[in-house]
Image (cartoon, rainbow, N blue to C red; front, top):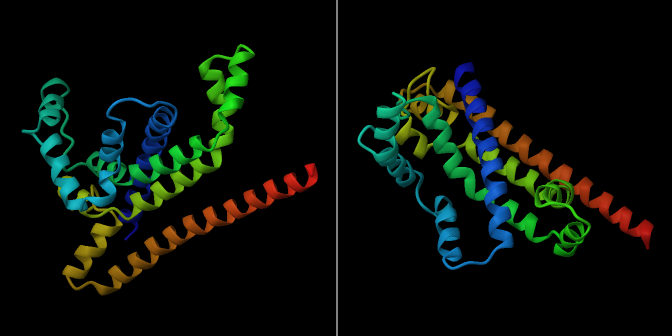
Length: 228
């Protein structure tokens, strides 16, 4: 029972970390620039939210499998096989949860006052400094919300993981997979215990996020009242 829990946490944390970096950079670019084809790109980014996870898993399998373009390239150049490894589980979790991070990050960046960034540029700050000293601190609450939501979603990923990583005990068997196959084999006690564990994880993450958001809002309100 411990192994799927540890593996799920490791997969979810790494996937959420990847989403946080890529989602932040992509959302910052999309929030500040308008160009031809932007709507199409954003539609593709959001596809994992509406497509069945098994469809995503099949697409990843075709891409990363031995006969897939990226899978063949990795095999020939690096001698690395992604499919049916815990790295495949990370990729599946990251892809499925990415839209949550992206949407939260984009909303956070859109809420930042552009005039503050422009003022910093006028005073001689470069783009990197403006981002680190102005944009990122102001967008931080939304970014944190995106990380927590993507982490919770990655913990519960099932369909895409099963397609691309398989159910290999001790190697790729995450909590959702362990629950499914425990039910299939009639081990209801194990399934029930794992359900309680993953539910507690998800509720704990969301409860913390809600509590933190409420405290943050109260702090901002108090600050506004004090200035008034």
